[in-house]
Length: 401
Image (cartoon, rainbow, N blue to C red; front, side, top):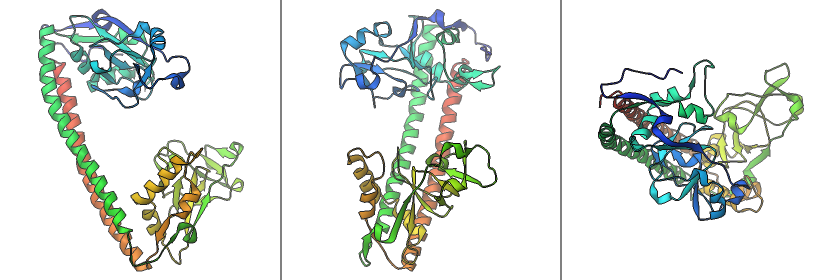
């Protein structure tokens, strides 16, 4: 790994991280795993709590004094920098607010405790600098990003360090600049959230039809569950007589396509068919767009096409009212881990004329176009702001801020 990315300004020096810290180490999960967690007590910080320059309280776990004593070597102190060292969130880094102390960390999080000559926030900002993070993760010889950081790797990191006074000056400037950018990003995210709420509200209104009959879905729609062919019939390549086996994940990614002997199943779908994801999270996804055989995690919604169009049914099943109903029933039902088919079949669907159905679908299409355009514009603005953050961080650690 090439450690030196640029020539340092006067007064800056390269140091190994191990020479700038009094502690680098990760923790463990108490015996019993999640079942052993408590409703309150001493915080057990996991990788899901550690985000870049941000500590996420949601799903914070707790342990009791006895469990904490077993992790007495990984006590989190005020000002400690926490670094995720394994998994999808590897290299995320933050400082835990004092309000969540006392605390311990599990095996996926490393404590980095700087000496008195290193400002914790300076070190935190340095690690989340995209160029530094990319350097930290990249395996030059292997041509792949790391899936885990060992203690030795972290200890040997080269850190560009100015005087403590200069560190504090840089932190003060970064706090001011990045907080403004983060506020702008939050406003843009709020704009997206508001747009989604408005979309859902309008979509729901489209299906509140008082001048037509409403009937239980089971009277106008057949729900046909999928099948799970034996793995002996699976193939990673398409062969004669084989078709794609459609799974819920395939509607989001085609990284791993599985094919199956068509003779091993009778459950097939086309791109136009309305498909329902039976299991989550999130449960009750409404999907379409793929051809093949579908497995047990999916269910095909087949409308009586004399009365309902597929497009009308597709959007109706996505309206918030039925979504909230089905998801709520599925979560409440004892032992139910997915869509409660009986509850779904009882839900009433308005059945207007085909002309009105086509009109509703057209209006939904216009609404979707507007929402997608807004999302693209806002996403582009957020990307630009994140690039600006990266540029500012890069300049800071070149002594240019």
